[in-house]
Structure formats: C-alpha cells, structure tokens
Length: 564
Ligand code: MN
Image (tube, rainbow, N blue to C red; front, side):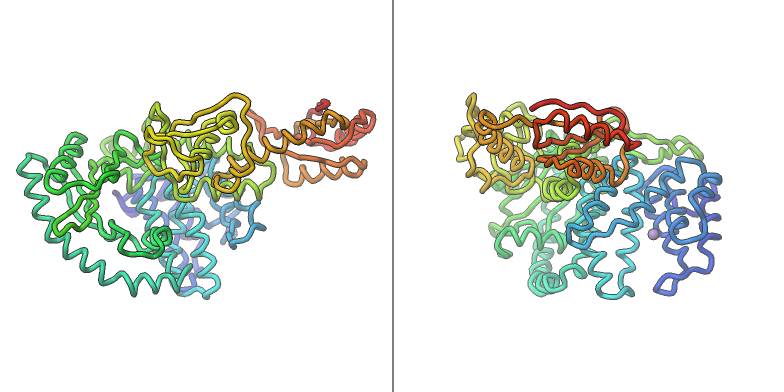
C-alpha cells in the first residue's frame, strides 16, 4: 500500500488536506513532546495502509482540526466540500463519546452508533485514531490510561471485530489489556510465557513435516506460519475454562495460506491424513462464513505425542479480508492508474455492510430508552458470538451461552413463544442446553403455547428476555382488561430533537394522566420519529386536551389516538 507521502504526489485532495492540517496544528504539541501533527499523520498512514479511499484519508488528516484548532466546520466545508466535512464532523462527534463503565454515558454511546450507521468511514477514521492513541498511551496519567483502555476493550475492539477487522481488533485488545486489567495481565505473562515457548518449539518441529506433505500432494503454499494466541483473547478464553491452561489447545496455531479454495480443502485432507482430527473441531467457515465475513477452514488434530494442534487454512484473498475486513470494501484499485481512487465496494462487502447496518437500525427501533438499547447492544452485539444454523443452513448469530430458546426468539417472537422443545444436530435437548458454533438447531413449536417464567433463568439475549416478559405480562394483563377500564394509546409523529420525549411526557403527566409505557423510535423511510404513549385513562376529553397541548410543540407533526 502507498504511504501518505506517495499519495500526496498523486492525489491533489490528500496533498491539500495535508498542508491544511499541518498549518492548522502548527505549534501544537502532544504530551510526549512530539508535534501534534505526528498523530495526524500516523492516523492517515493507518488509513492508507488499510487502502481507504482518498476522501477518508483526507478526512483522517483533518480529523482533529475542528476540535483542536481555530478551524470551524464552515471553513472545512468551504475548503473541502460536504463529504469531507461530514466525515470530520462525525469523528469530532465521536470524540465526545467516553465510556466510563457506567450507564450515564448511554446516550453518548447511542450517538456513536447512529454516527456509525450514517457513514461507516467515520468509524474507520476513529479506529485508526484510536489505534495510534493506544500506541502512545504511556505518558498519560494512570486514570486516563485505564479509562481509554477500558473503552477500547469494551467498545472499539469489539466494533473492529464486528467490521471483520480481526487484526485491528486483536491489536487494540492487546494494547489495552495491560492498562485495563494489569493484575490479570501479569498473571498471564507469569503463567503462559514458558508454555508459549514450549509450544512454539513443538510447532517448529512440525512445520517441515506439514510443508513436505503438502508439497508431495502438489499443493502450493503461499505462506505458512504459526502465531501465538494474543494475551487478551487467551485471557477471555481462560475465563471460560476455569483458568485451566490445559484446556486451551490453540495457544499457538498454524496458519496456512494457499492459492485457491480447492487447495484449502486439499490441505485439510492432507493434514487429516497426517494426524487424526479432533471430532467436532473441524470448522468450515468457507462454506458458511461467520456473519462478520470471516472465511477459513479450521481444524484441531492430535499431533505427535498426542498433543493437540490447531490449523487455520485460507486463501490470500480470505486472509486479506480477515485482516482488514470492511475496510477492504473501500480499497483503492491500484491497477486503475494513479488518480482513480474508487469506492469499489465489492458487491459482497457491500451486502455485508448493509446487513449489519440494517440489523443495528432494526435493533434500535425495538428499544424504548437509550440505556436499555445500549445494554442490549453491549450484550447482543459486542459479546463473543456463536453461529448456529437453521435446518435450512441459515446462519444465526448469537452471544456465547445462548440456548435453543434464544435461537427461537431470534428467528421470530412467535416461534419463541410457542417453543416446546428443540433438537440440536438431530438430537432432542433440554431448552436450557447451551448451543455451540455450527450446531444445527430445530425448534419444535405448539400452537397457543405460552412461554414459561423459568426461561428467564437461562436465556441470555435481551431480546428473548424482553419477549418472554412481554408475553407473560400480556397474559396477566389480558385477564385484568376484561374487568378494568380501557386505556388510550397516543401515537405522535415528531421531528426528532434531543429532549422531545421529555417534553411530550411532561405535557401528559401535567394533565394528571399516568403514562404506562412510552416508546420512541425513528419512522421508516424518513427522518421523523414516532412516539407511542400508552396512557392510563379512558377519558377521551382529557386526551383531546392533551392533544391540543402537544400540538403547541413545533416538532409535533401528527397525532392519533386509539383505545386499547
Ligand atoms: Mn485524534
């Protein structure tokens, strides 16, 4: 990939952004004493390395000018146009997002997610910025180091993973781990170092055997190496295995890069011919890629002395994608000559991106308040995932620890509500059975069945929990409704602004009407939001008065009401 210095020669835009940012940050210093511009340049270099388009690299160069210099958004718009200033603006907005491990930051985190859904390139600039900041964390005071490190562990590394940028995600975690969890880090270093060395020595002996076997079978190997598992991910895995190092088989794994897909499967056969595979550990992520797009074949075999060895086999293209993920979809087409940066957005990458953003949007719609949404986001979205399959082969992405009931609700709330049993890989299992990746799950349903209270004890996805609670509530409420008064639901379409939900709810409560539930979310296809307020009254006159008062809010566009 070209460096920023090289790109300045071919891209007038990048050159102009470079000069503009250099002038704007002139005289500013980082805490290390280095000129501030060194951080700017490093961020842009990272984006260039990922092969980002020229707009993103230019915005990377400009990413701190609005926040840290006299340059205004207006100046930027005049000088560089809407696209660039929009990207910089997005990054500046994200700068206000700070994770402190508590829920008061929920609304800010929501902003982050919304910004992301608008233009993912904003997130990529932010990730490049964060990667450089994590590399230069040392001179900061300890509390700040810890906060930034935790934020990186909890928000940015999982986001990078979600975008398919596994290498970046791993790097961020490794950089953050010693600052975020110093004691745990020390434990790992003390306990693992020797084992790592022993494992590496063992694999070194195996390498020529594998190379020769592949060569004898006419498989051309582009690269073969073994990589120690990163400390941060090792620690996470240890937490799931009672801190028992003996249970971790992939401390160091082989990675084989071959030229095409046939060679991948060919290599797998050759390796299984050398050493018997561990049943259940053969993973075909080529036929069934992970939802983040990751493709590879994985297997674990009993090597010499019955030691377990993990292999990962993929093509060069898959490798590139595994490392750079979604960034690859903006990659610069070098063959097309000097100046043509293109938003290549290969069809597949684009689809992946679209599905991901769509999932975010639909998730967001389902949640009433930002805190609940953020909790769900963190649990459902950022936690370690497993990938179960429907009998037809569709991939269902679930958090680790998910059960058939989580699976059922993920497919459809009716399937969840009517679930009476489940088969995993053809065998009947209890409903609290913990699913594993590549399990084929079949849900057995029965009409008019209701979920059971006890399910709440084992489901892990917040959407399943919400659906179960809802179904339980409806059953008891249904009975009450027969004898009790009706309620009125207000549906209010508004132009969204911060605080509008508060204004609406205070108008209703000032009229001495209790609100039972208040839900707000964006309306499909336009920028309006819909607020639904279930009011504990059957007095139509009261509601009509409330409607008149609500209409005095200039953001309110339409109001409907109905008896429920
Ligand atoms: Mn920065």
